[in-house]
Image (cartoon, rainbow, N blue to C red; front, side, top):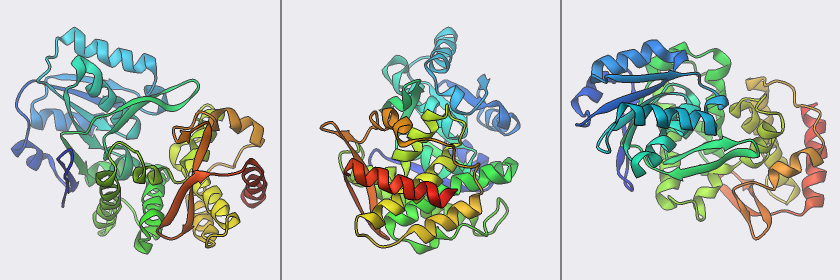
Length: 342
């Protein structure tokens, strides 16, 4: 199936055996391939089908999204003499598409790139929307640029290699899209597997939600900020623990905290749905972190405006607000959150 993004225009392809389709619509000009070594076999199939001569495999994960990793990929392209009319193909999970997209956004002031996401997280979130970037020691995604891909190919065959827990982690973002759009079908990922016949339709539905939000607010001035539901606490948790938690695990905890916050501010009680998601995901136990340990990382949140962090608060399915919240409410809700997760 194909999902069209209108501005900037590109197509998201979701299905099985997409190499033939990619060959037909391949971009002219020089090509280079950046890929996660964990999916090398699949990446080499892409390289062979699209006749990509230059290839660089690196370890995936948050360790790739560093200034050092960014510099290494830039130096590789520069050393090859890759010109401005080249296309960078990126095969891997969300950290690779974030890094590869940022490299493409900044190398020679911008070259084209094509994403081949190989995790559920990358399919429903990282590869769509044009957000690219890397981390700093001070926090996650603090350096980046908006740079839309030329195309996205989400080949479901690549998802067969995922460990079960990694497969489930990516569906946390799809669940989040269900909360944002009020689509109850997205709140039921529990029966899905890499071979489930409805997986493609489910992922396409989640991607469609993100496309609608991004098209309404590409540069994240207002509506797009709602896509950060659950991410304020999640990013602080990741940074405070030096990324001991995967992104999916952190967001699942963040969604429960956001649901508790929404209830505390007079909204509907969505905590049951969030708790059910956590029980299904079975993340590692929440660490012994005081609120004060999270605050330095919360203070660097990208949704900060006028010196205050703006939280994405769900007041009901499909009804969210982005606003500052008093510290006493945040701390009280965090204490309640710790009681629930422990």
